[in-house]
Image (cartoon, rainbow over all chains, first blue to last red; front, side, top):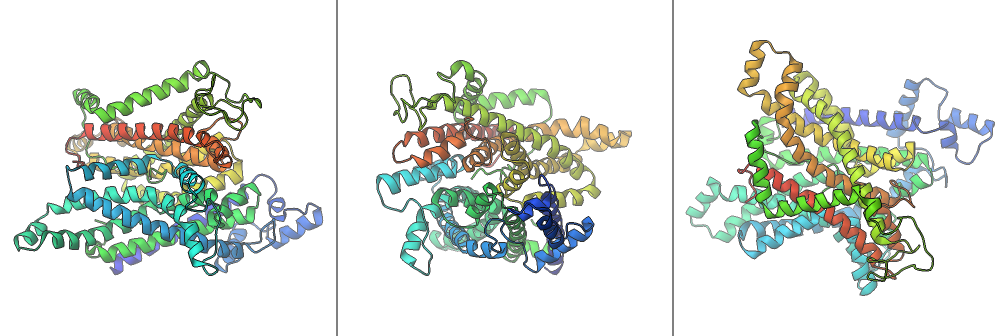
Length: 318
Length: 297
């Protein structure tokens, strides 16, 4: 475990440093004078020079990068060009919305995906399996933003079951908050559910024919508990694996879902900042997302190594 | 979800001799679902190629007299949108744009990813370097990557293809790397090494040709992901810019008028689904045809 942990941490650290370099290079690659991009409205030479001093644009590149890294580590990501609010503050206020959306989507996806996956594996050859497979195929082929539009059309406009857009903070009104989050969470979780379902089904099928299952049945254990116990264990591994693999997709999906349903989260902040040419915010978003992705992946891998002892023993992912 | 990063498929071993290829093709053509997918794809490609001939109207032609016509209206089989543009024509041209971006981005991913994967699989020293590179690319979720590129280069069709292509490179590297690792250990490669064949010879004459079938399957998974990616980017305004027709921009415009003209949202979406479903069915069929032992049943 120690060796795996150390090696994994090292990899993540290297990746993180490389990622910051990429973003740094990206900002320097912006068209025109970076001082203009960072200054925003002010165009006169004196303000531009002040901006250059402030952001250290007159220093050699490697020194700029070090300052950049230092700022990043101390949480200083600059200020929005449009509103002059610190980027960190904007990110912090947008994050809870996205976190809630992602959490709910994962919940929906795990429950639906695992249950249908188990159903498809256990009821092979019966109509239930075809239904489940069809659901998986749809989930993988249907663009989730179109599904979102259809959901709005049929569940919010034609039959006003849910609000078409908007957000209410949980603290203000938990019921309204959840009411607004149902459609977005289901839409975001739908594609993920299809992937989880497929994986659960194949992993269940694979292990249902293994020796230890035959032993359990031979011992006289009820079919239900045989399937139940090891289905549970299997599904945990599957969900954790898929979360690790699909994290990027989840983040991308959240961006789109927030746009459709008008949720003031991370995703909406990202898209808006591109159109507003708010470069400090764009940079902050890209940097924080990459960091979060690397860290979460690390956590998922570590969690995975705890669940699956084969990794601990061999130091390799089996 | 068939997303851009997640578009990797696990494919078992591929054969080598030409008669096998014919067998594979026959097997593929016998599977009804895969065959349906193939037919839809061929139709889609013909539609895309013959767009100027097939489309009843120019896709950007507006007509303020005939806005929001429902499907089945005279002259407009699928209706018109908020600016009176014929939806069928826009879908035809939009399909063309989707296919162009889809194919271009996958070609980019192949051209960059396959050589890197070959190198990573063949030369152990390069493996860790290339793995770090892959990790860095993966650290930027597809949309974040697209956002960054849009900030630097502006939003456009080529920017969308570039973003999608870059996001698919890690998948290509992974697939070609694992194929290379597998093929490296085969007897005839060891024989070639013993004969004194150069690395380049082995890679280009022995390894690459045999990895091709796996890569084709990977491409059939990657293209629908790319098509979806283009739709998403155009939907957000980061890809193809209006008034150029794109299935994604059609959907984003449709959202504004969804209560009044739901067909403007349903039709483009069905077109996207048809395309991606066709590719997915084809890809599944191809994968099954390549190896009957593939565990799907």
